[in-house]
Image 1: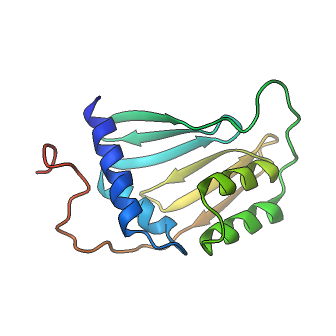
Image 2 (image 1 turned 30 degrees about the vertical axis):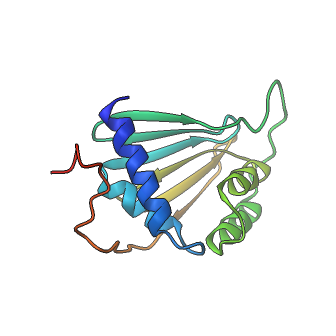
Length: 151
């Protein structure tokens, strides 16, 4: 296992511990940012996430949402925003959020952890971008890194 994988795994575990059920994404994003992750890119139909980290890129493959040949729904901004708001309210878990993105015609999304933006795109290039708030994760002295990697 590479240091990038170890660091990412530790950051995801820490984020799970500090993020509230409702409105938790900014806490996840900040924990990842503090661990050296600059971007997260999701290929929605394949449910594959790519994390770009200071220690190197890491791919995480979830269970694909579809297999074989399927039609892609047209991009539907209203349906996407509804999926976002349900997730932000803590009404859905991540798998349901990704499914909501897919049903809204999102084929990929990109999270820029430094700019604090999430951009969602359909097959025709249509898109929607949202910013998320800055949050502080306390205690600041808690490192998201495992002891072997903490400075």
